[in-house]
Length: 610
Image (cartoon, rainbow, N blue to C red):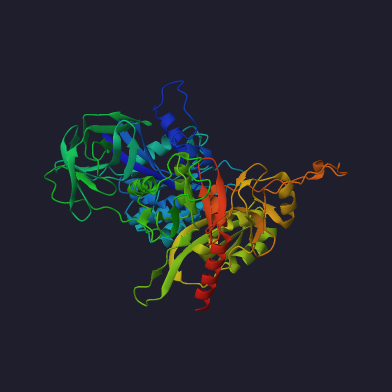
């Protein structure tokens, strides 16, 4: 059977996973009347809740006696590492572009990687049935993007289809019959080349995806580049430098059939398979026959740009809500994550019981923390900070820069421009995008965007859309102002009392409700002034034997501001931590004791003066 390996790449929310659903159903991958969940490839709980793809996954369909292996990829820039590593496995790509939103930053990122690999993409303008669709303008934008990314003449001559993934049709012309996705299947067979492999050479494959299975253990997925894989055949695992990591046997060979992985006895070169039986092999190791002379080439992945400190939870409430609280358990979990996720880097910190975790962005690290808290971990997380570098030629300090594309309603352009310029952003482009909206492009340091997204949504009344993409390194831009408001800090431990919170809420915005456990040094709310304020949240009303004229019913509390994990991480300053447990997310000061806080502040002031 002939094989085609194709990846579906696009910006977030342009319809990749929904299109894969329709490709699977129209190819007969599902039984008649089989109940299939919407966005079937998003199996992870977090993916279902957030409505985004986090991990790259494989599926397989058969069309006219040809097996098409489809790899669904994440669309968010923070998970770009998933896209980079799976481009090893495919020979073609379907670039999906929203007919209304057009070319967005992540489209540029993934298309650039695909073109650099020599892939000739198929372009699908999706959602052409939207009322605000502008397919002809989007077609021009895509051509301009290919040209700007240095595409060859043959890559610029890309085939294009108009489609509606949700309704399950694609056509070569805009006003076509719109019946089904047959034109897309046929175009894949015509345009995507067969894998260029060496069937007679010794077996070899590069591991591109690592998963853990409760029954099989470590499962490595990749494309067989050469030779034939057979069950129980002896293999060795080679690092990129040629050193042998381990030798073993392929106890299980799994091939993709629809959404499922099914055991097979033999797999020929060119097919995408999953193998089990290896305890040390990881990404991007080469798994090959014992006679294989050296490792295969693997794509280098862009380095991380943001780091956070993961520490044990040492608050007074530690160990009450989670099962995994020791530094050894946290260390094992983080290093296991770094094995399967090539965009994350974990190192031991200078602090005791702490680890430095570097990744692509706040969302990627926030997803990791959320997964860990659901697994029963208790953690303390520090403020995100950017990873700088020295320019190899001049020796100057450089920081990561991002390209930010903002779509806002006309009345809110002024406040967005003002806020981003305050955060050292430079406007590169500004143009009307129709419907009373304006599209602006900025170049801004990554650290200027930490904690800005929530403020942006508030400023634009929830109507603004912000997309960002790592754009390389630029000169250090100097200090960027952080949060202006101080904190309301608890002086006592116990349970917050309604009577006390009613008096405290006059001083700022509260984060806690009556009855919540608090401790000394915990942040109860945001102060209305720039300085911190220490307050007592457990003080109760003194009882007397004289009946009071007033009633406690009049003490109405304003509902507290409850933060999500990402909001809390973006909110804290350098002297604050986020305490994360399976049951709660709390904010606290780095030093819980007020005397230690004073000493730390004096030390910071002395260092700044020096």
